[in-house]
Image (tube, rainbow, N blue to C red; front, side):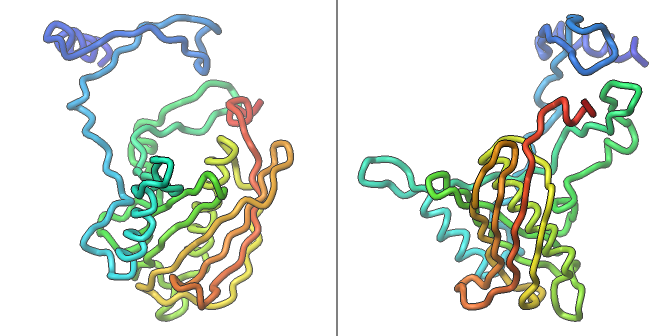
Length: 251
C-alpha cells in the first residue's frame, strides 16, 4: 500500500501537481525533532469545504431577516471608513479528525471511525431538519449572537425543541465565543435555567456575553430569546478553561 501511494505521489510530482515541504512532527513516536518530508496533495482532490452558515432554501423568513440584519452590520461603513462591528463566523463540517490520544503516547488517525466523524451539529444532510444556525461576533462589545432555526428532528416535548438540543446550541455558541476571546478552551461548567419551551421550526436568538476572565478561566453568560426579545427561553452561565497542546495530550 505504501509503495502504491509513493508511486502515485511521484506521478503527481512529475506532472507538477504536487509539492513537497519539510516539517517537524512533534506529536508522533519518532524522536523529538525528527524531520520528515511530507507531501501536499493537489487541491482538486480536496474540494473547498462548504460553509453551512450561509442562507439556503430551508430558511424561513424570520431566519433570513435576522441574518440580513446582522450581515448588514458587518458590511456597513462607519464614519472612519471601517466596516461594521459584527463579523460572521463561517461553519464547516471538519475535514481532518484527530483520534483519541492513547496513554502509550502519540496521536493516531483511525481509518474507519475518524473518516466518518463529523461535527454533529452539521451532520444532517437535509437542510433545515435539525440545527440551522449562523453566528456573528462583536469584538468591540465582546458579544456573540447566534440565529437558530430549530428543525423537526430536534423534537422533545410534542411540538417543541428537546432540552438537550438547546443545551447543545448554548454550548456551541458560548464555547465558540470563549474561543474567540481566549483561544482554545474546553467547557468546565454549564448552568442552564429553562424558562419557556421553544416551538419546533421557530427562529430564536442566542446572545452570549463575556462576564469576566480570570487566568485560564473565561466566564460567559447566554440568553435564548425570541427574535424580538419579548420571550425569554433560557438563561445560562458558563465556565470555560483555556487549554494547550499539553492538556490535549494528557500532559
